[in-house]
Image 1 (cartoon, one colour):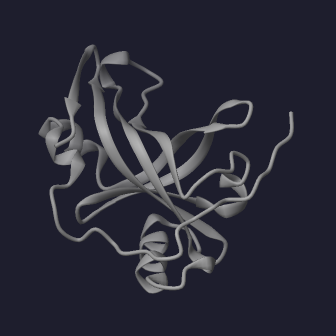
Image 2 (image 1 turned 90 degrees about the horizontal axis):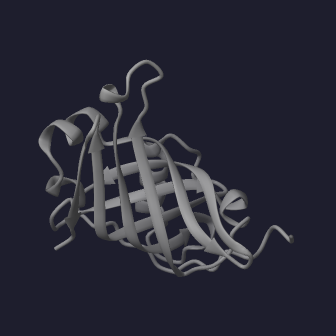
Length: 161
């Protein structure tokens, strides 16, 4: 099928500094081992079906963000709001009981850093904190409705507030 589309992002960005951090609803041992940033997989709808893209994630203030190059996000297109699933994990090649992770499902608010007319500085700082260069980056603020976590053979579902 055809790949590549225009990413429609918000023109303004404001970091969510207040409010409950969505990951705080998870078991402490899961959150503690995942940390507050790392590699992730971002799932979102595209014209021909769902697409999963490599991303970086960052928990900051009252939000969780997916950060990826704009050209990668353009493979799926969409925005400025889009249904998303963000999967964060710590895999184990040796034992299933050592695997842990979380999947956040909800709505994503897309911001393309270079196109922002307001909030470019705070968006750039978040992108850099996630480990990417702000120039050419896109930021997706995840507003989760449901979080599914797992640790070994144990798992659970948490509904967002």
